[in-house]
Length: 88
Image 1 (cartoon, rainbow, N blue to C red):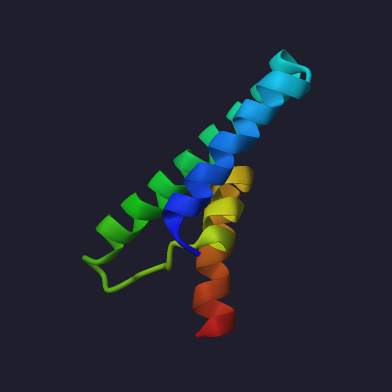
Image 2 (image 1 turned 135 degrees about the vertical axis):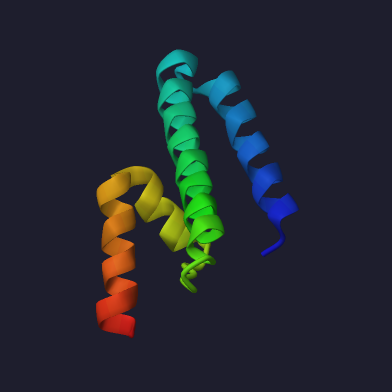
């Protein structure tokens, strides 16, 4: 899907949370999740930036960003292990 569509849906969801939901609690949860996903994407970006020196690349997609964002460093290490030992 188009990235602009994702951003638009996120904006509509945020507006609906403000209008109909319990704004403080749900927006705090949504904001924390969004920050974690952004940090996960940045971590994967820097991993790929420094990994090119040794010939390593881990794709950045919704699954890898979600795993690295929600699980942090152990999630990134798990993705590297899966990529090296299982996928090959």
